[in-house]
Image 1 (cartoon, one colour):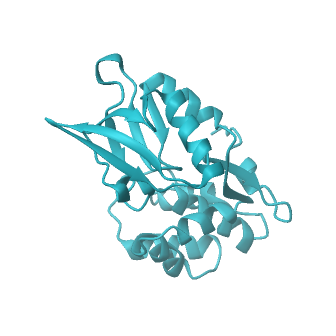
Image 2 (tube, rainbow, N blue to C red; image 1 turned 30 degrees about the vertical axis):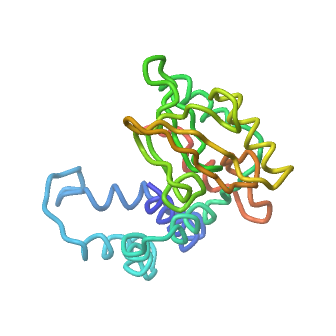
Length: 217
């Protein structure tokens, strides 16, 4: 998704706003008569069609997205449409709705865990982010949170502990149940509540708004 968002932005930039991904799609999927047609294609055909819409080193752009494992290409694609990823303590309304719908607690951007919030499995870790504090402390999927800083686990207790660690700079003490065993983990996270947000880049045009406009075909 971010790859083609980046391509769309570059098509608009290289053509002074005259062409977009829509023009590429119409040309790429057209048969001999110009109407959409089912036909085989190879990677080179993608680059050739993009170049026919607007000149550019399209192979370099696309391979940068496909061949790198970091977030640089993804975030550059987002920035190319006038937006950037930021983090703040303010909750994200989309994530709040997602949590309620799926009955999860999403704290992967702070301590690095997703927790089950369903009654029968409440407090069980669904997943951890490998390079974040909870995983580094030894937390893993399947473990159940029993207590946080000596208090019985609840999402309110966990969030209070995350906030307190930001003030005291002391690790969060988390008791977990794993099979027949209990362990206390020292989670060294001190940056407080952290949620992702999209923010406008003021000196760049809002191409994303153009991309998301309704279309009639």
